[in-house]
Image 1 (cartoon, rainbow, N blue to C red):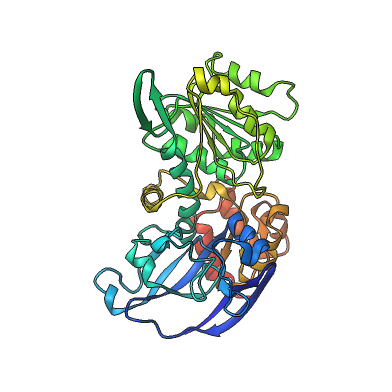
Image 2: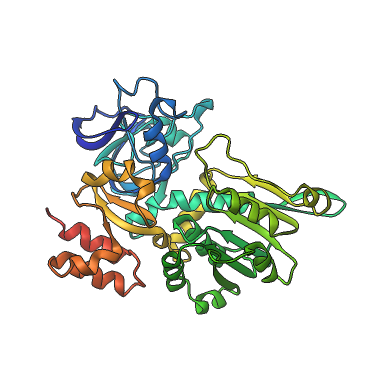
Length: 419
């Protein structure tokens, strides 16, 4: 089977290449990739090259396929797995394997397994660990986005709370509590809003902050007051850019009590310290953002740690159970991962997109591996539609869907983009 893929040969070295895949072994599975969403973790791996813990030291001679948030169809099943997997089924993948204590992961470490390829060979350890997941939903992009959504779900589950005089941690966010999502009008923050509103364990008040008016305006369009009320929650969006004392204002929204759960979505010193300032008694601060600075730090109020039982924890990624929960909630229509997506592109756009990811505004960049298409913002569909009938139709479809990518848009793109 011939495949086309984006392969990494080292630091800042991405190449689009076509090559022959070997025949699969009895304990492997051949898949066709349809979609992959670009993650900041891929950017970090590419700018570090061999210095990244998941990238093999021989990557310069045995290049790896990048991309780990992918979905597609099962094409051929090795004999070992024929009772469990069937040709034609859709799949999603949990890339955090932790196989036998190694850091190897699809999209970072394998020559024949990564999201930015037309065809892949899934190695035996993925199936052995239960990380090749059955997906029964309609759209491929939803399964791709199950991985970043699982990171959010894992963060919510990993929070914990206590009671005075009882040595017991109650896992999960405070049900019916106050939640603050700081610097959260980006893709992962919006995913967190979606999950907070539609999961089984919900806060009563959700405050979302950011300093970018355009991002906040988009968030308000996606998550209306009416939708929040239906979920039994009060949802507020706050622009803290011009506030002299944002911490004081945010605490006032809780009647001075403070927040039970605070999530920090940007590795910025002032935001982390703001999170510490607004914690209530037994408040849990989840540092969700992944910094690249190994010495990143911020001040923490240790008086409150001692006397008010405030605490800090962090999560990086979700586990397979979180991924399964994400897929099930998506299949049932309870969450909509498309809230994270702002750009659509084809295989040809991957190297430039990955290498410039921090400098490209917006949220998730969604790649369709079987087409060539320059990375295009959904907000630009209308303008491009003035001269291109395909973009005109895509604009019509997403405009009927609150400006969000959707299964109908994916289906239309895959059936009509023949360039």
